[in-house]
Amino acid sequence: MARTNPGPAQRTTPAKRSKRRVGRPSIAHDRRPQIVEAFAGCIRDYGLAGATMERVAERLGVSRTLVFHYFRNTEALVRAVVRHLVEVNVKRLSVPLREVPIGKRSHAILDLLFAGPHYAELQDVVLMAEVTSLAGRDKRVRGLLAEGWEQLIEAIGDELGAAFPEADREACGETAYAVACLTEQNWYLTLVGPGARRPRAARRAAEALVAILAARGSHTKRGVRQR
Image 1 (tube, rainbow, N blue to C red):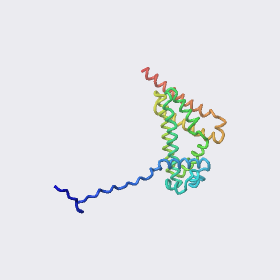
Image 2 (cartoon, helix red, strand yellow; image 1 turned 135 degrees about the vertical axis):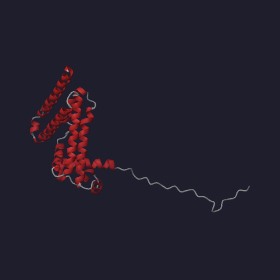
Image 3 (cartoon, rainbow, N blue to C red; image 1 turned 45 degrees about the vertical axis):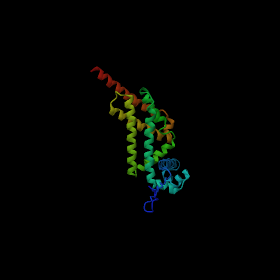
């Protein structure tokens, strides 16, 4: 049978493949933390009133428009800084303690809270003070700070509970709150002067609170054995 060439109606043309445009990978997950860190640095250096979008852009070497692309105003940046502070401080407390033996955990907690890296630089006290002052006027910032402190206090309580498993859970939480109060106020007083002249006073007070917690736990354990 003779082969015939297909006519115009019979010819089929291969389907054209649509070219997918591959754009640049998103850098938002990198850029946003950079902007938050730069804004925090501006607060440390110039205070909250002086931490402008222009200074953030200058610090990063980018345009002011780019900063506004990720954060529409200063208020949004402040809230992002608060979230950043909460996440960093809780992580700084919990992560290094994972490698510490349970028997040494309580001393390691106090080391982290009083010697850093919680406030490795006193300028971080300025950052926290500026944000806390804003909480008096901004309910959303106040809510974020409250949530952050609750997380930090709970993290301290969890670590104290791990160090003293016989201690009452409520007692661990109360001691955690007291230690957090001592720590935070000690940093403020260190910045302005009195704390610097008494470098061990707040730490000794915190150690006394932890010792009371440990004694209460031991007493509870002996009472259970005697029953």
